[in-house]
Length: 281
Ligand SMILES: O=C(O)CCC(=O)C(=O)O
Image (tube, rainbow, N blue to C red; front, side):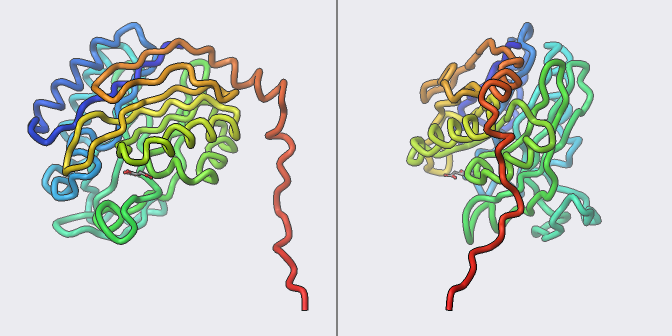
């Protein structure tokens, strides 16, 4: 399986429409890959909080249309990264935390996955919002649903940026059948060491490939880490990008996940339902 991670530069001096066209062209250039991945919030930038509301789109807005077409033209599975999604105001289902943002329905940090025929294969709304008491954590609502996508040869588990810090989410994806974990991110340079370490940790503990695609460039004064990375189920780094815009292409054998789990069956040794610590005295 050939995977291409498009580490696109998100700089605020480039208009969103231009970046969207550029991203589509980059996807088309990956014809011959099986899976193409874009990063988190690459239309606005993950830290350009003021742009979230301004550039928010309905699920089937301009990014959806552009990316569906690009996936079809290239004949690839496309994880199109995430968009600031403006959901309909009546979208209070079990899949959503219906906390609302100003100016219409709630905003979500929403990833879209397309099949090679351009059909929408999955929608993932980021569960762990970043920012503590500001930024995304305040402006966006949280998804509530784990998402996996069946591809020929492997099952993807989908996660977004800050999710990488929460191992229980990834274990949930593994329990749902994930063998390849895809993380779309806009990770800042100042915590690059965590990015690399956590990508490897999620691969080792879940005995799964990790394909983590970040952004390059600087927006809202936050230099981005780049360093998109592909890690195999044994924790070996198969490929790592530099800091600038780059397409990271890697050939991987999806059968390695099952082989690693068979040869070193640590996942089978999980002990669930432990009793809480007893209070003495
Ligand atoms: O966890 C981190 O250090 C970065 C997370 C982040 O930037 C995000 O989720 O947008």
